[in-house]
Length: 199
Image 1 (cartoon, rainbow, N blue to C red):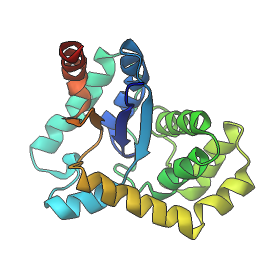
Image 2: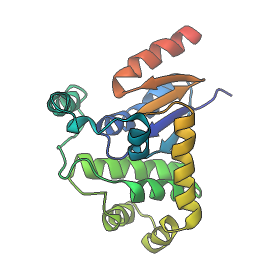
Image 3: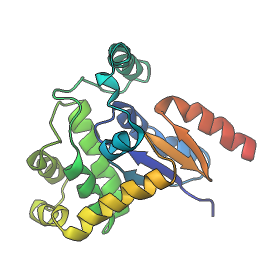
Image 4: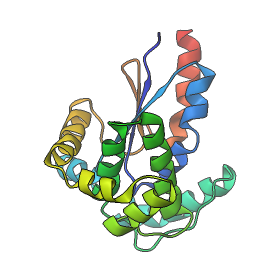
């Protein structure tokens, strides 16, 4: 049994959103599973002295254009959200909580939350919006609300971020395949070629 592709993603990352729409089809080409790992970029930016891409002078203007162009090129529904970027602690905790019961359902929730933010303009930085989106996806809202407030889930997210940084993760999307690291949606073809060479 081959190892899964570790897929690190932050819900405020448009490139992470793009990757979320195609990571599973890429993995399926090589009979791989995907291990979805929500992270927070804030602590990573602090550790690396970085900042949200759109906040960097000149580079930020290019990024906004490139994000919209990428969505068109890959036919991915996209509407630049406001506000942007946002804090995504509740969304990340929600996925981690659901993963403990049903990983497939957690993946569907992750995709639904991404789409809600980047295609529908819903501010998933707000806990009540995360819960509403989860409810629309058929999850028990009261249980999820209690779940994301649990100390063990809060600790799990912190540990997930720390473990990711220990593995060299610094952005979203970030994929680790058999110990090989790839950063960015534009590295999907690199992953494909690398896996083909390994075969």
